[in-house]
Length: 248
Ligand SMILES: *[C@@H]1O[C@H](CO)[C@@H](O)[C@H](O)[C@H]1NC(C)=O
Ligand SMILES: *[C@@H]1O[C@H](CO)[C@@H](O)[C@H](O)[C@H]1NC(C)=O
Ligand SMILES: *[C@@H]1O[C@H](CO)[C@@H](O)[C@H](O)[C@H]1NC(C)=O
Ligand SMILES: *[C@@H]1O[C@H](CO)[C@@H](O)[C@H](O)[C@H]1NC(C)=O
Image (cartoon, helix red, strand yellow):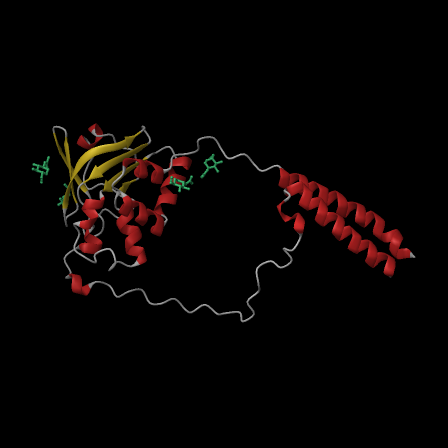
């Protein structure tokens, strides 16, 4: 029959493909070296920054920082408010913010360049933050220095740099005693006029049929490792193919 003739090269190809993918599976790529800078790790090590770490995770700004540090050489400066700084905010302050406002609040604590303590003496106000426009009414941030002291003013509140948590010439992390409150979010309008919670997103359409997670995990060879399982499945598939082929 023509079918057999036609199928053998196909089966050979299939076998080769299976073997190759099994081999690939077996070679788990080695994780990189000690890896690029990880802001979460730095803050965890310093302690007393659990709220900031949580905000970094919720807003995904932490990932942005890591990516930025890895991909540019301008560096970054982070003003890191302590847990105490967050807990001295008026109750409910963070919860009253929309997702976008949370992102802006966190970005307001980040300068898009590395600044050493001594460089603060020569910067010109207002400084630009990752939150965007430093023009009055938006996200201005002023720094004033005297001897070894660095103060920060946002137009809403004032903070003092208490300590250098980390510096490597690319990333500087300074502990601050207050959460820096940007004008755009916390400026003059009374808190009562805070923006309404974001409108609920259009409800996701449910597709009805909820497909069960990958069926057919009943092979006893499941735990026997990549190559073994790959071969096992490969042989099985070829057997089925052959059966089909010869039945025709
Ligand atoms: C960064 O560090 C945190 C905490 O140590 C860890 O959970 C996270 O996976 C790390 N991120 C990366 C990209 O390595
Ligand atoms: C870091 O940068 C290198 C080189 O530009 C790139 O190959 C790698 O994917 C980057 N890693 C992350 C986590 O962004
Ligand atoms: C910084 O702030 C502290 C406390 O508010 C104040 O005593 C000090 O004079 C300020 N220093 C500068 C340089 O603005
Ligand atoms: C920040 O500095 C600019 C320029 O010196 C000034 O016009 C502005 O009033 C300052 N704002 C605050 C809140 O200190």
